[in-house]
Image (tube, rainbow, N blue to C red; front, top):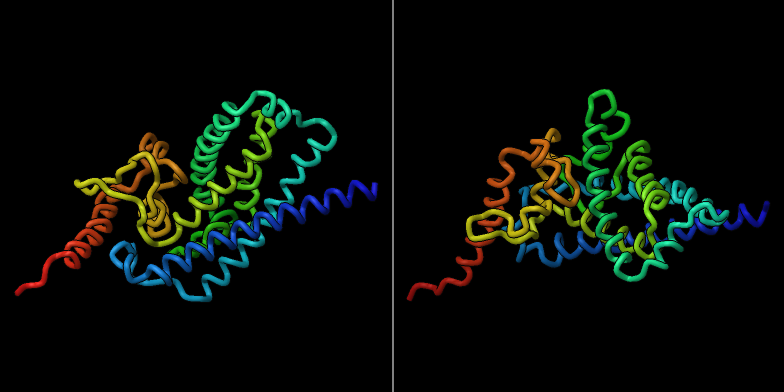
Length: 269
């Protein structure tokens, strides 16, 4: 019994260490790179003129660590099932070879986008919002640290996806690691406040099926729109894409283009 408790404790601490490290590396890294090092070169791509106060960043950081603790606790479910032999999926997936390795990663990302969209819309219901989602929207002007700044209920909803997926779909453990890496990269960039995605000549996103930073920033500014996480598919199909999204994206990317043109134009003789 003691050995089992120690094993669960070690697994929880390992999960915390990995996820906290991943969160710190990318939240601090994106913040330092965009807000400090490249702030001047990327000034034209800043979506809003103002920046959140330091107090907001500290609260977001602390709340995100709490969310990671919830993720690690929920992760004990799959650890326990695997330990007693009731989670054969990882071994099955390994026997299916490298093609399934990468296929399962793509499917996991697509499924998580659907999970996020529909649970996100659910917790925007006025009967649930205050308990499940208000903390995240207190960051009206988001930062990279906003990534995991969740109420307890929202953290649980986000954390349960991986165990459910692992139970239902044979998936190797390294695939989960890559999925989590992709998720935190997209999450910190999506809350960064700088539009980093390329635009076509007509001002539309070069990759229209991917959510841009402007896409999610609009959700924080006007919460009734843009519920998607990675892809624009569900917002387009369900009619929840902000009506001015493409206009706002074009405006931000055009600001950069004008700045580049100004700096590259020869000075008058």
